[in-house]
Length: 315
Image 1 (tube, rainbow, N blue to C red):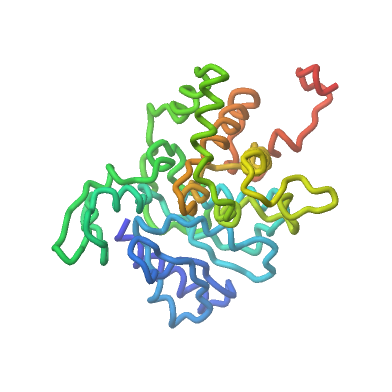
Image 2: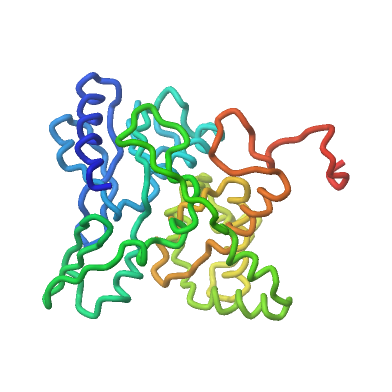
């Protein structure tokens, strides 16, 4: 993916010079290793600050909500699917956007890298299928496939769902993958085992709301955690409040989540809250044949009513 950046810069500069967009939303090198940060480019001369590599995991669709400008946005597969959801839910209009599609080969999980390196990481680079990690002790080469984010390992929509320009040729999608292997494992547990599993999963939660803030779907003007009339959930570290927050947030994402991994990536204590949204994603696929963000023409199943719906419970 390192070869994409020249094309990304060229497209971005042209869009700004021709005044087709007011800004381009992309990535620049972050101040911390493996942490490229979002940036807004408004001047054609600034496009050289743009970067693209396997550390651009933040979902840029998060920065589109209710904007009024004409925007160019760099979008990998999951980003583009969230952009589709934003358009469907009237958070931005399609004609405001010029989508620079980036075929994705997976984003690196910084925690997996750190777990393999004993020294403090000073910098990283990429070469072919390797991540080169630099420390005071020297350089260590890691196989990129071994340090990818878990959601990337099971992604079957690596190419952008919609785009106006492409930064590179489309990549071959992954096949013969059980996207819901972990979900099947939990479904097979007894009630007691499930209770213990989720107790242990959520025990480290510090209620920082990083998962909510990073999620491109969490854009309600007032979140349910801040409602006081009525108060849906308490502000304490009580286990009931913590469970209620995670369960309700997951249900708000039902039929909308693209498994971009933004929530898990942002969590400072490494909670895999994707297990909640993956279960709901699987249910939407099994019951409605629905995958979020693949089409601008179809409405999500949870905001659609058909008089001939075969499910008698809704009549």
